[in-house]
Length: 350
Image (tube, rainbow, N blue to C red; front, side, top):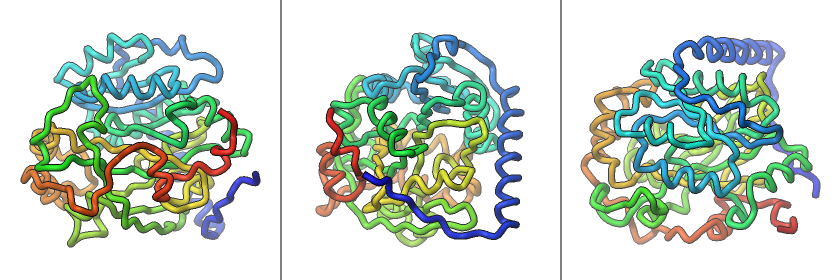
Protein backbone atom coordinates (compact mmCIF):
# COMPACT_ATOMS: atom_id res chain seq x y z
CA UNK A 1 0.00 0.00 0.00
CA UNK A 2 1.42 3.40 -1.01
CA UNK A 3 1.74 5.73 2.00
CA UNK A 4 -0.60 8.72 1.98
CA UNK A 5 1.36 11.97 1.70
CA UNK A 6 0.04 15.25 3.07
CA UNK A 7 0.97 18.29 1.01
CA UNK A 8 2.05 21.18 3.23
CA UNK A 9 1.48 24.80 2.15
CA UNK A 10 4.37 26.26 0.18
CA UNK A 11 6.50 28.83 1.96
CA UNK A 12 9.17 31.25 0.84
CA UNK A 13 12.93 30.75 1.22
CA UNK A 14 12.92 33.48 3.85
CA UNK A 15 10.28 31.63 5.87
CA UNK A 16 12.28 28.40 5.61
CA UNK A 17 15.34 30.24 6.87
CA UNK A 18 13.45 31.67 9.85
CA UNK A 19 12.05 28.24 10.74
CA UNK A 20 15.54 26.73 10.70
CA UNK A 21 16.72 29.37 13.14
CA UNK A 22 13.62 28.92 15.27
CA UNK A 23 14.36 25.21 15.56
CA UNK A 24 18.00 25.86 16.46
CA UNK A 25 16.96 28.41 19.07
CA UNK A 26 14.47 25.99 20.64
CA UNK A 27 17.06 23.22 20.75
CA UNK A 28 19.65 25.50 22.38
CA UNK A 29 17.09 26.79 24.87
CA UNK A 30 16.09 23.22 25.72
CA UNK A 31 19.66 22.04 26.09
CA UNK A 32 20.39 24.87 28.51
CA UNK A 33 17.33 23.93 30.57
CA UNK A 34 18.98 20.66 31.60
CA UNK A 35 20.63 22.61 34.40
CA UNK A 36 17.17 23.15 35.92
CA UNK A 37 16.75 19.41 36.48
CA UNK A 38 17.98 17.34 39.41
CA UNK A 39 18.27 13.65 38.64
CA UNK A 40 16.67 11.54 41.38
CA UNK A 41 16.95 8.18 39.62
CA UNK A 42 18.96 7.48 36.49
CA UNK A 43 18.35 4.08 34.98
CA UNK A 44 18.99 5.14 31.39
CA UNK A 45 21.78 2.55 31.19
CA UNK A 46 18.91 0.03 30.95
CA UNK A 47 17.77 1.52 27.63
CA UNK A 48 18.41 -0.99 24.89
CA UNK A 49 18.92 -0.37 21.21
CA UNK A 50 15.49 -0.24 19.59
CA UNK A 51 13.72 0.39 22.89
CA UNK A 52 10.59 2.54 22.78
CA UNK A 53 10.77 5.44 25.24
CA UNK A 54 8.08 7.55 26.91
CA UNK A 55 8.69 11.18 27.98
CA UNK A 56 6.40 12.92 30.46
CA UNK A 57 6.42 16.06 32.59
CA UNK A 58 3.95 16.00 35.46
CA UNK A 59 2.90 17.41 38.79
CA UNK A 60 0.68 15.74 41.41
CA UNK A 61 -0.65 12.86 39.32
CA UNK A 62 -0.61 10.06 41.90
CA UNK A 63 -4.25 9.15 41.17
CA UNK A 64 -3.42 8.55 37.50
CA UNK A 65 0.00 6.96 37.66
CA UNK A 66 -0.94 3.32 38.46
CA UNK A 67 -3.11 3.00 35.36
CA UNK A 68 -0.79 5.18 33.26
CA UNK A 69 2.01 2.66 33.78
CA UNK A 70 -0.28 -0.34 33.39
CA UNK A 71 -1.54 1.01 30.06
CA UNK A 72 1.82 1.96 28.58
CA UNK A 73 3.67 -1.10 29.82
CA UNK A 74 1.00 -3.22 28.12
CA UNK A 75 1.62 -1.26 24.91
CA UNK A 76 5.33 -2.09 25.12
CA UNK A 77 7.02 1.06 26.43
CA UNK A 78 10.50 -0.04 27.47
CA UNK A 79 11.58 2.93 29.57
CA UNK A 80 9.96 6.07 31.01
CA UNK A 81 11.85 9.37 31.33
CA UNK A 82 9.86 11.61 33.64
CA UNK A 83 10.26 15.15 34.95
CA UNK A 84 8.43 15.79 38.22
CA UNK A 85 7.64 19.49 38.56
CA UNK A 86 7.36 19.86 42.32
CA UNK A 87 4.81 17.18 43.23
CA UNK A 88 3.74 17.05 46.86
CA UNK A 89 1.08 14.32 46.68
CA UNK A 90 3.39 11.28 46.74
CA UNK A 91 3.97 11.13 42.99
CA UNK A 92 7.72 11.57 43.43
CA UNK A 93 7.98 8.66 45.84
CA UNK A 94 5.79 6.45 43.65
CA UNK A 95 7.88 7.20 40.57
CA UNK A 96 11.12 6.52 42.44
CA UNK A 97 9.92 2.99 43.13
CA UNK A 98 9.38 2.10 39.45
CA UNK A 99 12.21 0.01 38.04
CA UNK A 100 11.67 1.21 34.44
CA UNK A 101 11.67 4.94 35.28
CA UNK A 102 14.44 7.51 35.13
CA UNK A 103 13.32 10.51 37.15
CA UNK A 104 14.26 14.18 37.27
CA UNK A 105 12.90 16.83 39.60
CA UNK A 106 12.52 20.59 39.34
CA UNK A 107 10.54 23.39 40.93
CA UNK A 108 11.26 25.85 38.12
CA UNK A 109 8.22 27.42 36.43
CA UNK A 110 6.44 24.98 34.11
CA UNK A 111 5.16 27.87 32.03
CA UNK A 112 8.63 29.44 31.69
CA UNK A 113 9.99 26.09 30.46
CA UNK A 114 7.53 26.14 27.52
CA UNK A 115 5.09 24.07 29.59
CA UNK A 116 7.73 21.42 30.22
CA UNK A 117 8.86 21.09 26.59
CA UNK A 118 12.32 22.48 27.27
CA UNK A 119 12.97 19.83 29.92
CA UNK A 120 11.66 16.96 27.84
CA UNK A 121 13.52 18.09 24.73
CA UNK A 122 16.78 18.19 26.67
CA UNK A 123 16.18 14.55 27.64
CA UNK A 124 15.20 13.60 24.10
CA UNK A 125 18.40 15.16 22.76
CA UNK A 126 20.45 13.09 25.19
CA UNK A 127 18.56 9.80 25.30
CA UNK A 128 15.94 9.74 22.53
CA UNK A 129 18.05 10.02 19.37
CA UNK A 130 17.34 7.05 17.10
CA UNK A 131 14.53 5.72 19.29
CA UNK A 132 10.79 5.79 18.79
CA UNK A 133 9.71 8.29 21.44
CA UNK A 134 6.23 8.78 22.87
CA UNK A 135 5.65 12.20 24.44
CA UNK A 136 2.44 12.35 26.47
CA UNK A 137 0.92 13.96 29.53
CA UNK A 138 -0.09 11.84 32.51
CA UNK A 139 -3.76 12.32 31.59
CA UNK A 140 -3.33 11.02 28.02
CA UNK A 141 -3.67 7.36 27.06
CA UNK A 142 -2.68 6.57 23.49
CA UNK A 143 -4.76 3.98 21.66
CA UNK A 144 -4.68 2.85 18.04
CA UNK A 145 -6.28 0.14 15.91
CA UNK A 146 -5.66 -3.30 17.45
CA UNK A 147 -3.78 -1.80 20.42
CA UNK A 148 -5.43 -4.45 22.60
CA UNK A 149 -3.65 -7.24 20.72
CA UNK A 150 -0.62 -5.61 19.05
CA UNK A 151 2.09 -3.62 20.77
CA UNK A 152 3.87 -0.43 19.79
CA UNK A 153 6.83 -2.39 18.47
CA UNK A 154 4.51 -3.88 15.84
CA UNK A 155 3.09 -0.46 14.95
CA UNK A 156 6.47 1.30 14.73
CA UNK A 157 7.91 -1.51 12.61
CA UNK A 158 5.02 -1.06 10.17
CA UNK A 159 5.42 2.74 10.21
CA UNK A 160 9.09 2.37 9.31
CA UNK A 161 8.21 0.01 6.48
CA UNK A 162 5.82 2.69 5.22
CA UNK A 163 8.54 5.35 5.40
CA UNK A 164 6.75 7.25 8.19
CA UNK A 165 8.68 9.06 10.90
CA UNK A 166 5.76 9.38 13.29
CA UNK A 167 2.12 8.88 14.18
CA UNK A 168 -0.52 11.52 14.87
CA UNK A 169 -3.54 11.41 17.16
CA UNK A 170 -6.69 13.28 18.11
CA UNK A 171 -6.90 14.25 21.77
CA UNK A 172 -10.39 13.07 22.72
CA UNK A 173 -11.95 14.47 25.88
CA UNK A 174 -13.70 11.80 27.95
CA UNK A 175 -16.21 12.87 30.57
CA UNK A 176 -18.65 11.35 33.07
CA UNK A 177 -22.41 11.53 33.22
CA UNK A 178 -23.42 13.81 36.09
CA UNK A 179 -21.81 16.86 37.70
CA UNK A 180 -18.03 16.99 37.44
CA UNK A 181 -16.34 15.91 40.65
CA UNK A 182 -19.32 13.92 41.95
CA UNK A 183 -18.01 10.52 40.82
CA UNK A 184 -15.59 8.12 42.46
CA UNK A 185 -12.48 6.61 40.92
CA UNK A 186 -10.04 3.94 42.03
CA UNK A 187 -6.49 4.83 40.87
CA UNK A 188 -5.89 1.15 40.10
CA UNK A 189 -8.85 0.99 37.72
CA UNK A 190 -9.29 2.03 34.09
CA UNK A 191 -10.27 5.74 33.93
CA UNK A 192 -12.65 4.99 31.06
CA UNK A 193 -14.87 3.19 33.56
CA UNK A 194 -15.52 6.59 35.16
CA UNK A 195 -15.12 8.75 32.06
CA UNK A 196 -17.10 6.76 29.55
CA UNK A 197 -18.60 9.43 27.28
CA UNK A 198 -17.27 11.63 24.47
CA UNK A 199 -18.35 13.94 21.66
CA UNK A 200 -18.22 12.41 18.19
CA UNK A 201 -18.03 15.94 16.76
CA UNK A 202 -18.09 18.43 15.33
CA UNK A 203 -14.36 18.93 14.83
CA UNK A 204 -12.78 21.39 12.41
CA UNK A 205 -9.23 21.42 11.08
CA UNK A 206 -7.05 23.84 9.15
CA UNK A 207 -3.39 24.07 8.22
CA UNK A 208 -1.31 26.86 9.68
CA UNK A 209 1.50 28.70 7.97
CA UNK A 210 4.43 28.80 7.90
CA UNK A 211 4.98 25.57 9.89
CA UNK A 212 2.23 23.63 8.15
CA UNK A 213 0.91 22.29 11.44
CA UNK A 214 -2.70 21.21 11.69
CA UNK A 215 -5.06 23.05 14.04
CA UNK A 216 -8.00 20.92 15.20
CA UNK A 217 -10.65 22.33 17.53
CA UNK A 218 -14.13 21.37 18.63
CA UNK A 219 -15.54 18.63 20.80
CA UNK A 220 -16.71 18.57 24.39
CA UNK A 221 -14.56 21.24 26.01
CA UNK A 222 -15.40 23.75 23.31
CA UNK A 223 -19.10 22.93 23.60
CA UNK A 224 -19.21 23.33 27.37
CA UNK A 225 -16.55 25.93 28.19
CA UNK A 226 -15.78 27.89 25.01
CA UNK A 227 -19.11 28.19 23.24
CA UNK A 228 -18.75 31.98 23.01
CA UNK A 229 -14.98 32.05 22.43
CA UNK A 230 -14.41 29.17 20.04
CA UNK A 231 -11.09 30.58 18.84
CA UNK A 232 -9.67 29.96 22.34
CA UNK A 233 -10.85 26.38 22.66
CA UNK A 234 -8.16 23.72 23.13
CA UNK A 235 -6.03 22.45 20.26
CA UNK A 236 -6.77 18.75 19.86
CA UNK A 237 -4.23 17.52 17.29
CA UNK A 238 -0.99 15.95 18.46
CA UNK A 239 1.97 14.05 17.01
CA UNK A 240 2.95 12.10 20.13
CA UNK A 241 4.93 9.23 18.60
CA UNK A 242 8.06 10.08 16.58
CA UNK A 243 11.24 8.27 15.50
CA UNK A 244 13.36 10.87 17.23
CA UNK A 245 16.36 12.80 16.02
CA UNK A 246 18.34 15.21 18.16
CA UNK A 247 17.64 17.78 15.43
CA UNK A 248 13.87 17.66 16.10
CA UNK A 249 11.95 19.98 18.38
CA UNK A 250 8.35 20.24 19.44
CA UNK A 251 7.14 23.84 19.26
CA UNK A 252 3.78 23.96 21.06
CA UNK A 253 3.20 20.88 23.20
CA UNK A 254 3.15 18.02 20.69
CA UNK A 255 0.70 19.98 18.52
CA UNK A 256 3.47 21.11 16.17
CA UNK A 257 7.10 20.30 15.47
CA UNK A 258 10.14 21.28 13.46
CA UNK A 259 11.35 20.41 10.87
CA UNK A 260 7.98 21.24 9.38
CA UNK A 261 7.74 17.95 7.46
CA UNK A 262 6.85 16.29 10.76
CA UNK A 263 3.57 18.22 10.73
CA UNK A 264 2.53 16.32 7.59
CA UNK A 265 2.25 13.13 9.66
CA UNK A 266 -1.34 13.87 10.71
CA UNK A 267 -4.33 15.20 8.80
CA UNK A 268 -7.00 15.13 11.49
CA UNK A 269 -10.39 13.44 12.01
CA UNK A 270 -11.66 11.71 8.88
CA UNK A 271 -8.19 12.10 7.40
CA UNK A 272 -6.30 9.59 5.30
CA UNK A 273 -3.07 9.22 7.28
CA UNK A 274 -2.74 6.42 9.86
CA UNK A 275 -3.62 7.85 13.26
CA UNK A 276 -4.70 7.06 16.78
CA UNK A 277 -6.50 8.73 19.66
CA UNK A 278 -5.20 10.14 22.92
CA UNK A 279 -7.90 9.43 25.48
CA UNK A 280 -7.89 12.57 27.62
CA UNK A 281 -8.74 11.74 31.24
CA UNK A 282 -8.72 15.32 32.52
CA UNK A 283 -12.20 15.10 34.02
CA UNK A 284 -11.64 12.54 36.76
CA UNK A 285 -13.29 13.50 40.10
CA UNK A 286 -10.24 15.45 41.28
CA UNK A 287 -10.75 18.00 38.50
CA UNK A 288 -12.60 20.61 40.54
CA UNK A 289 -9.98 20.68 43.29
CA UNK A 290 -7.16 20.77 40.75
CA UNK A 291 -8.82 23.59 38.85
CA UNK A 292 -8.94 25.77 41.96
CA UNK A 293 -5.23 25.14 42.49
CA UNK A 294 -4.19 25.68 38.87
CA UNK A 295 -6.24 28.86 38.62
CA UNK A 296 -4.01 30.29 41.34
CA UNK A 297 -0.75 28.80 40.02
CA UNK A 298 -1.24 30.31 36.52
CA UNK A 299 1.10 27.81 34.87
CA UNK A 300 -0.93 26.34 32.01
CA UNK A 301 -1.63 29.08 29.47
CA UNK A 302 0.39 31.74 27.67
CA UNK A 303 -2.10 34.36 28.91
CA UNK A 304 -3.66 32.93 32.11
CA UNK A 305 -6.03 35.88 32.54
CA UNK A 306 -7.94 34.86 29.40
CA UNK A 307 -8.69 31.42 30.84
CA UNK A 308 -9.89 32.23 34.35
CA UNK A 309 -13.51 31.69 33.25
CA UNK A 310 -12.50 28.24 31.97
CA UNK A 311 -11.38 27.24 35.45
CA UNK A 312 -14.50 28.85 36.92
CA UNK A 313 -16.62 26.80 34.55
CA UNK A 314 -15.03 23.56 35.73
CA UNK A 315 -15.26 24.55 39.40
CA UNK A 316 -19.02 25.10 38.89
CA UNK A 317 -19.29 21.31 38.29
CA UNK A 318 -21.34 21.21 35.09
CA UNK A 319 -22.80 18.02 33.69
CA UNK A 320 -21.05 17.69 30.31
CA UNK A 321 -23.31 14.83 29.19
CA UNK A 322 -26.07 15.36 26.61
CA UNK A 323 -28.30 12.98 24.70
CA UNK A 324 -25.86 13.36 21.79
CA UNK A 325 -22.97 12.02 23.88
CA UNK A 326 -21.40 8.79 22.63
CA UNK A 327 -20.51 5.95 24.96
CA UNK A 328 -16.85 4.94 24.82
CA UNK A 329 -16.62 1.24 23.94
CA UNK A 330 -13.13 0.98 22.46
CA UNK A 331 -11.01 1.74 19.43
CA UNK A 332 -13.25 0.14 16.82
CA UNK A 333 -16.05 2.63 17.44
CA UNK A 334 -13.62 5.53 17.23
CA UNK A 335 -12.40 4.24 13.89
CA UNK A 336 -15.96 3.87 12.60
CA UNK A 337 -16.63 7.49 13.58
CA UNK A 338 -13.54 8.68 11.69
CA UNK A 339 -11.69 9.80 14.84
CA UNK A 340 -8.77 7.48 14.08
CA UNK A 341 -7.57 5.74 10.94
CA UNK A 342 -5.97 2.31 10.85
CA UNK A 343 -4.87 2.76 7.23
CA UNK A 344 -2.96 -0.21 5.82
CA UNK A 345 -2.09 -1.20 9.40
CA UNK A 346 -5.46 -2.98 9.56
CA UNK A 347 -4.39 -5.22 6.69
CA UNK A 348 -1.33 -6.54 8.52
CA UNK A 349 -1.41 -9.92 10.21
CA UNK A 350 -1.38 -9.82 13.99
